[in-house]
Length: 267
Image 1: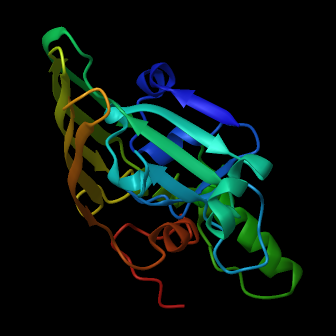
Image 2: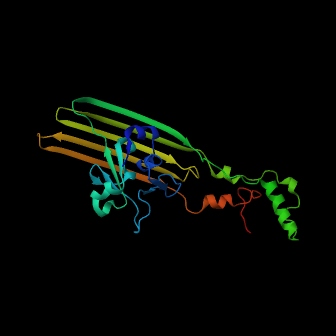
Image 3: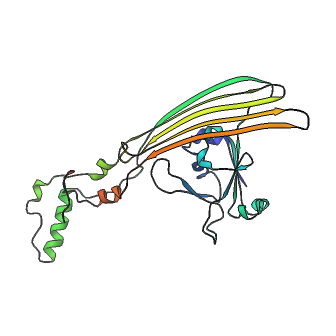
């Protein structure tokens, strides 16, 4: 069993709760389905099973839920159950179980309002070492000359550096998160209300690649008697994402640096 607490979530500031498990829980593999903003993650706790569904069972405050729908700021703890610990959930827990406990106010505590925000700039972590236009032309001329063909570039000195398609494709992407919460409690009651908005741009084509998530969370508990407790847990969220189709990155990195940015490859 592995536990990720609120302190870890606060330090990591993940875009979604799923990525908080990446590198923090032993034996858990988290892989994003794509590099697009807001892309869902695939979680493997007990490896690849024999059936087609390898995703673990997610329980949020006692009910089946989805990690991608939760605001990470609302989470008190994430517990990952593996092997025998997950057996109490039967066949549904065959791929492991993720237990999520969200925050709630404390009894006899004055109302507390908390607002936090953060912003970040995202960049690609690694770029490939490509030939520039002159280097590319010299290599291509050598290959053509070795096979007895006419050289494609007769004046290499005029090519210069050429086009750097990696520099043109990748850009700095902006990330912004706002979160406000209101919590407290009386002698027999406790409450927690929060609202958040997350906006993330893509590092490729940020004008047409972005992700927005809005969350509203309500967690209310009332002790009607010593043996009877009433609780209300609600999570409302909306997501909107925009992306592009086609292999933009693959095509861009396979264009020769001798081509201009607006030039078509007709070959």
